[in-house]
Image (cartoon, rainbow, N blue to C red; front, side, top):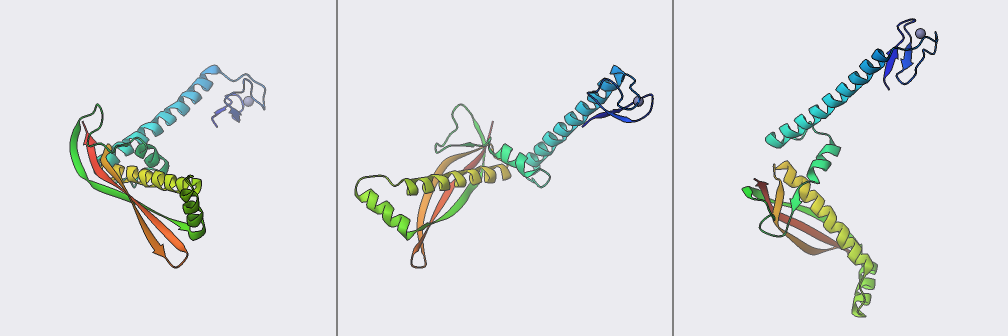
Length: 185
Ligand SMILES: [Zn+2]
């Protein structure tokens, strides 16, 4: 909260107040404007510092100075495609192959129910939801990976599901999303 000092009695007042709460003298408009300007400048400076940090991280691939939220936001702009090109964009450089894994468990009861329903020609909502969630998680992770290597997009994405048995009544499914991280023109 921004506050201004009363020129008459030196106490702090809320910037939105028209009169001093203590002495009742009207608070000059110039003081208000100056206080609001200062607040705006601080905000602008913060935004500028943020973008500077992101720009530097992009160049150096060192994201340690960028907040988690900003990394997420930047990563969400990464383009993902199963195609070998990005529509309407030129690929400047292929950086490297990247991958992201997501492992999730499905208990045998769910699996049996799923196969029973599949057997009768229905779709298993539980399995489908689990697979969809896993895919989303893996692709989000892939975007983050891409950002970390300085990419703008990931092309030729391939999703690979691998089933693993863990113990007697637990099945784990591993989803691997991989692709080529590229820099766009
Ligand atoms: Zn006052």
